[in-house]
Length: 385
Ligand code: ATP
Ligand code: MG
Image 1 (cartoon, rainbow, N blue to C red):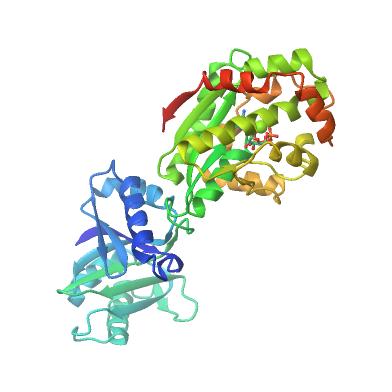
Image 2: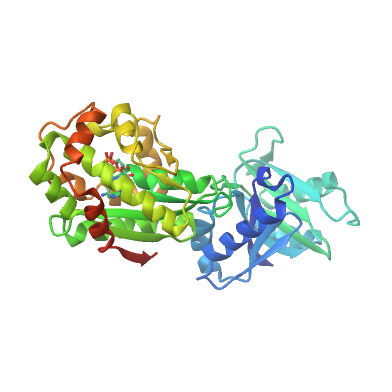
């Protein structure tokens, strides 16, 4: 008897002509997620099995597999010989001593001497005898279920519950996006959502060193690390915008600081995206959340992006919905650490809420836009996550 993990994938992405493409990406992502653990991943009749691992690694494996997009459900199982005594030995490990239960037998190997119903009945009787008086059969509303799957070559899989997976599409099947990653709550969630739809996500962070400190940068690296568990690795690029903030501060109306800086960020981001082959920008903006996230604010930043779409997966979410997702993906504790990213430096007391494009352009004309962008690119750093 050997402990294994069953991985079932969402069927949706396996329909149609591209099946092989999706499946290869999925398998690669599974392999990558568990690469540091000594184990073997095999494909078996429309699902995957992880086997040959040390039992002490079970939780670790499940935790990693739960984060792979495309995984529908997981089960911890025992692979055993298909005679009823061996099946019973494995089933005991999933059987509670009290409560109601049912057995779901499934005869995958049609040559097996018992039918699915007979397997369920026979194993049910053995378990009832084993926990005599403690457990009862309830096929409609059991408190736990024991499942038996008879495989070929005299083998069987015995398991209990289903663990819900991350669902979604395998990362790497829906192009590549460049995420504008701040140190806040929203942008990591935005990246997570696009990865769930199969997109490869790379990250770009703007900092204002030395106005912001090294801890602020480490925080963003940590966030990229958390995100990378879902995005099957990522790259983090950092670019300094200190000189841009200083130039705006010196020459332009203070209430337009955020608006103008945003436009620089979007310009730089688009150019960088095109260089790395990303097909869109991704931001964590949500309509009306802060002064710069009005539709006018979005229009102002969008209007400097010439070739790529800007995806804002959180645009219709309330803050508490975003927080819920942030907690679930494990980023929240890091996101709320108090280190400032660049936008809080030089913050005006009253930012413009509905910036007018003509005014913005007039203010921007006071700046050497191209020169400032070029200087920003000279500070670029790349971190493999
Ligand atoms: P977040 O929680 O993601 O920081 P926020 O609520 O603080 O968002 P803003 O500061 O207005 O909102 O930023 C809106 C979006 O702009 C962010 O979600 C992010 O995508 C991008 N952004 C903001 N600051 C930076 C930065 N320093 N580097 C990269 N992207 C940024
Ligand atoms: Mg922010």
